[in-house]
Length: 213
View 1 (cartoon, one colour):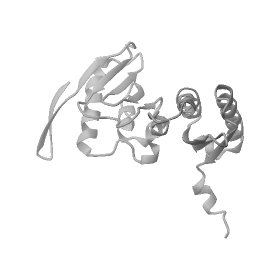
View 2 (cartoon, helix red, strand yellow; view 1 turned 120 degrees about the vertical axis):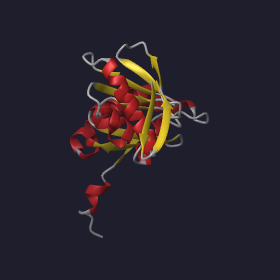
View 3 (spheres, rainbow, N blue to C red; view 1 turned 90 degrees about the horizontal axis):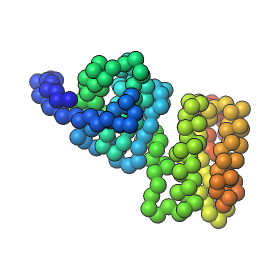
């Protein structure tokens, strides 16, 4: 994937390497530059990609079904019908345009969603386990509903886990109740140290008009 292109009189060359994965429908693209500074980010569908200009550009390519950001690579998954011969140049162009545009990887630092569940060396075993469960079990379920969930902390003295709900599922009370009990059951089942779960909802926008001081 070697391309020369000229934009605004500036000639830039970027060499993007590809690497196959165990899944023939997925290919890793190495732009030769860092992608995620910490952790990784998964975009299972175009809706979740709205937070990232690069993921959004990749989903705009016909046939792209999933995008994943790692530390120094982007994995693109395609539909069975689409050929890599068609997709590769499109993906190369999208990645190069992104890096030459100077745009941030995420539009809003809060939406670097996976950051909150990146496990740090000083995390206790309990915290590491909570993050692991959120990352592998709970976040995918919440994202299927078009929302997201953020880890906000654990208080060992009280046994309270703080979570923040975002997006589609945070606005509707019915889903938040079922979701909250589902999350509580799962977390408390795997981590008996958890005694309670506090859920913060991202509903600032809707409350402002109703609040009277």
